[in-house]
Length: 74
Image (cartoon, rainbow, N blue to C red; front, top):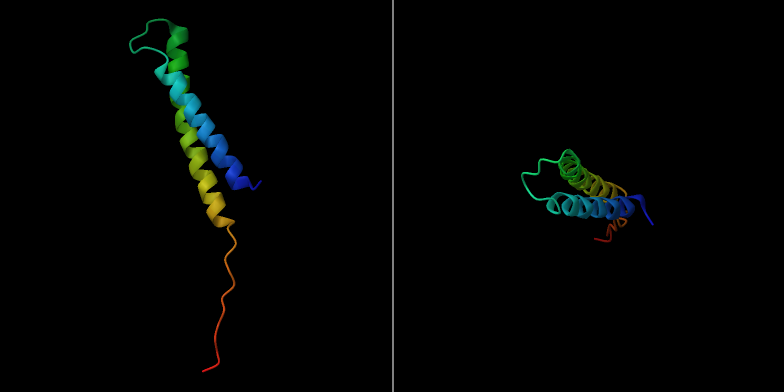
């Protein structure tokens, strides 16, 4: 599997994990552990978006272009 596709898959998994961590904790928690989990979910989710974007760019950069066919028989 190419590097770009692996990064895209990892980024999507990170983003989904961040959503679960962020939305599983209610807003306004006073417990420091729960606030840390919510903040970690924010960080993992945003990092997942960046990894996904990097994977898309790697995929587009490494994509093979078809050869140019020139017709010079005019």
